[in-house]
Image 1 (tube, rainbow, N blue to C red):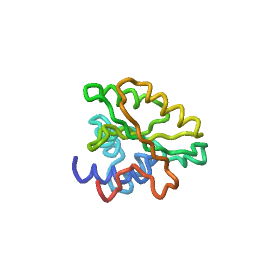
Image 2 (spheres, one colour):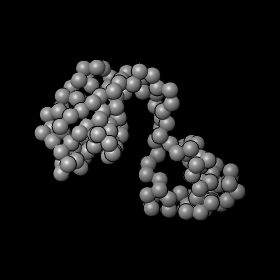
Image 3 (cartoon, rainbow, N blue to C red):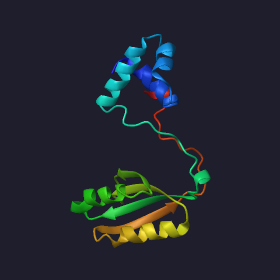
Length: 149
């Protein structure tokens, strides 16, 4: 990845709807060059997907929860894979410390969170969970900032 690739990534992180033509114009390159560079970044897995940022509350998801899980060691990856399949889950992290897994999940209602936690605890390889509910989102943006690329 060279400096031109980084410049293209900065532009796409700022607005992934930018056209090849707009990127080419902003960077002073040919449209074909912009297309080929972006295609290469997709092919090698640097660009995994194009998406949008949603205001979760405005679409009905009132609760964000951080769920920590202690799992039986040899079944850790299985527990993580199962959690990652669930629609409510946006992030699954393999972590260090007293717990093995950290999950970030969204729920429309507290009943949904309750059902989720109980279903996790039904997994015989889950030893313990601790749930923290977010009271206020101060900042939430998982994109790598353009200046850091």
